[in-house]
Image 1: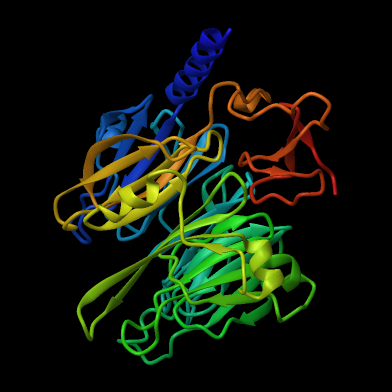
Image 2: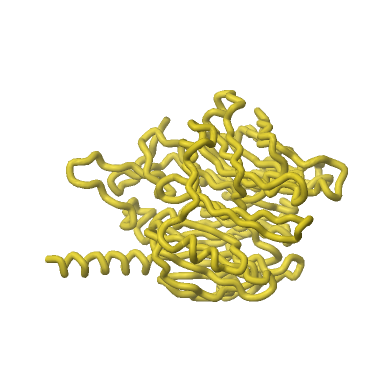
Length: 426
C-alpha cells in the first residue's frame, strides 16, 4: 500500500509539473529593441524567442509587464516601443494599442485593460488632451482603443484593481532631472468614471515597480532615492482606504523590489537596496503576512525565510531579478540577470521549495505569467486541492488563492467552490 501511495504521489507531481506553462518576458537592453519572450512548459524551455517564432517579427523594446485578460487574451506592456501588445495564449499577436506612450504596468477586469503611463505634455485620444503629469489609460478590448484617460501623479507605476477601484502607485521617478519632487502617494480612481476620488500619502517616496496583490492588500516597493532615503516596503489595505481610513498602510523597513503573492496569501519579496554613495547592493529576503502586519502595525507577520532551499539558492545567484509563484500550482520561480548584459537564468522549485532545475534564458529576465492548466476555463482545475472528508468545500478566487464567498477578486467576480466556477453577485 505504501508503494502504491508513493507511485500515486509521484504521478500527481509529474502530472502537475507537466502542466506548468510559464511565459517569461526578457527585457533585453534598454533602447536596443531586443526584448524577448521565453516559453517554458513541462520543465523545459520551449523557446527563448517565442513571440518571434509565432509571429515573424520582434516583440519590441523593454517589455515590462504581462497579464492574462481572459481565456483568449494576454496583454503585454512594451515600454520603450510605446505599445501595449495583445496576444492569444498560443503566442499569436492579435492587436497592438499605440496610444499610451511610455507605458508601464497593467491590470484588468476582463473587459478593459488599464495601463499606467509616464507620458506627459503629450497628446492622447485623438490628439485633444494634454497631461502635466502621468496618467492611466483605459483600453476597451472589444476594439483595442483607448476610451478614457485620467491624470494621476508624476510617473505612475504599479496599478491594481479592487472592488471597482484602481489603486495607482506614483513614483515621481524623473524628479532627478525634471522640475518636480518625488511622489509619495497612491491615487484611488473609480474604474468606471475614470476619476480620482482620493489620494493617500504613504509618507515614502518613489513608489516604484509592479504591485503584488493579495485580496484587499497590496505590496508596494520603494527604492528610496539611492542616497539618504533608504528603500522600504508599504503594505496597503484597499478596503480601509475605500472606507476613508487614512491609516490604511504600514511602512516596513524592508525593500520589496521583486515581490509576488504566494498561494497562502502572503507576499514573498526579494529586496534590493542600491546606494550611489557606496556603489553597492544589499539584499533582504522576507515573507509577509499582510493581515498580520496591518493588525500589528508591522510588529509581527514578517519572516526572513522562504520554503525549502529557495532562499539559499537565490542567495547564490549573481543578481536576482524576478520572483513568482504560479497561482494555480504553487510552483516557485525566480530569475538571475547575471551581469545584465548576457544571458540570464530561470530557476524552478516545487511548492515545498525543492529545487527542480535551472534554465538559460535571455537578457534581463523579469516578468512572469503562468497559463492556467487544462480545463481551468471549463471550471475544472486539477491543481486546486479538494477538501478533506468532513470539511466544508473550499472556495478559491480566480488566481487560485483560498478565500471565502465574500472575497473581492482582482480580476473578476468569479470564484471557485469545490472545483466549479460560480458567478458571485455582491
